Amino acid sequence: MHPCRADIIAQIRGQGPISVGEFMHAALGGKHGYYTNAPTPLGRCGDFTTAPEISQCFGELLGLWAAYQWQDLVLDIGYKGPLHLVELGPGRGTLMADALRAIGKTKPKQTPEIHLCEINPHLRTAQQSLLAGHAVNWIDDLNALPQKPCIIIANEFFDALPIEQAVYHLGEWRERCIDYQAAEDRFFFTPGALLSPNLRPPQNATPGAVWEYAPARAAAMRLTAQHVAKYGGAIAILDYGYLQPGLGDTLQALRRHSSVEALSQPGQADLTAHVDFHALGQSAHQARLRIEFCGTQGDFLSGLGIEQRARQLVENATPAQAEQIITSVQRLIEPAQMGELFKALTLRSLKML
Image (cartoon, rainbow, N blue to C red; front, side):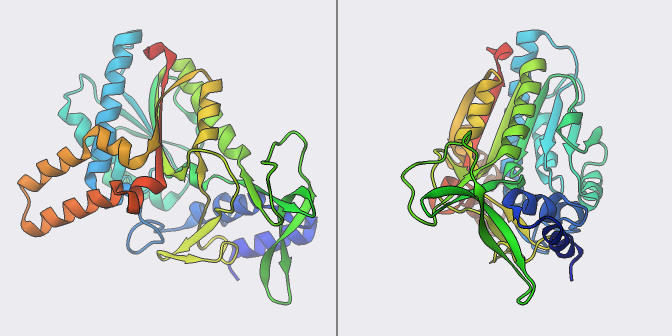
């Protein structure tokens, strides 16, 4: 038995059914969790592929976005230090490597300082190798963000933070919990306590409807936004999700690039849920940040010039390479692929107005 599965079973036996958030926390960030220990979560040999692994254009454009945001910050508040570029959940370091290459083309006066928020020791080793020669600092959580102006990039970071779920059961909204059945060795969903009256789920629900809310994501967004509001900077968030809140169960698990039952392999599969970008925007607004863009990833990347960059790369490519470049960019921006499913949110501190 995988130790993460054993941990969750022991937790349930000790306290009874646990919340979806507790399950996700143990399955992903616990002592034996997936993100804590998985040696190769990304790429062909892993369980999923992210946008930076699909096309170098993705990281390059975010690097240029960061450089221009920094130039505005320098002009607005007169900050004299180097660019402090932060990435939350940096994977193997591919996005950062591509971003730094693009930033270098802008000829910055000072070498950027890089801060990577990463808990996986295997990925830290990969990042260290790929980013050799750059000034890189690793941090364990958002409380360790540098107390300076920052440009923060979070690509597929929020989707892996725990969510909570409620289920409409017998005319009432109840917490959706997870229990364990020993005879069949399986986890299963079960209604829990009545939902707190402080929460406001939609009222037009049918029996069995599921509503998701994410206090852990709200806390992370609030902490990040307050940091940027205090010190100055900008934030770019890209993830799969939705722009308007609603009902629906989006909890999902991936292993070896295939969907598996969400509760079946804790600690061994990538467990995520769609991101409520409306809620993230509300948290940012409360922290007094300006929303610059909130829409689809396809529109965001097209606005940054991804198709023009692809054409530049094609000019010096072989026919086979050119086809790969075009196909990869289309995967990122086409509505039927990642262009509509993934959303983007960019924010700026009011000091930069």
